[in-house]
Image: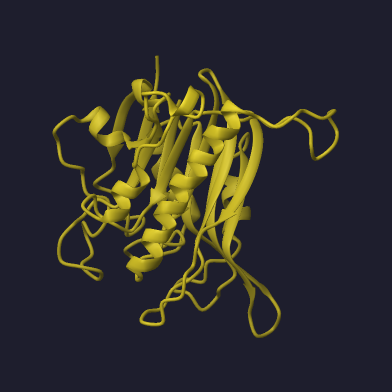
Length: 290
């Protein structure tokens, strides 16, 4: 299974051109992906550079055979009452079992400009069984909010693992209480707006007791960064500020792919496209296999 994740900067390249097709083509150049996770996808917000338009609809039209799910962290209206949305998108050609959108914490921080953040979750059927694909974009300007959001992402995974270990009582199909596809297998990806030495990076990966074992057993579970699994002992390739120093003078890695324990042995490749300038971030490829 191949997944590409990319903060697209509302599909605005470093040349100032807004072009969703260039983003899709860039992702396809990395791999014949099964899942595409995009952050900073806009609909409306004509005051943004380049005038984004309806990007979820544009991207859907560029991906025949894929289902597209858009989660708007910001969902509001302009002065004329027109819809304005900004958030994350997951597109997949694999069978979809469930979709869920989780708002993330947004604690008050009056010292900076911030916006709401969320996590879009699409559970898909794969050759390895059901996988929860989670994509997100954490707060950039507020460390307080970013840390709270990182902790919340881990909590979402812990809760999902507990549901998989002890699912609710089933009800007949055709009602909201019908059985749900709970799974221990998860991928969490996106723009986390923090380097690997940020406390939030470790907060996401903090171990927790295995809910399937009595009293948690002796085998703690966790989400873990897939990069070290594919590149032991090597620093992350940078994903931000390679070609633009607007947000800082040195390139950093802040776009990550985390995998659950069940998927860690299946990580075959993690790669960053360090050449494209179709966004101010670089796309990341994850390949899972036997």
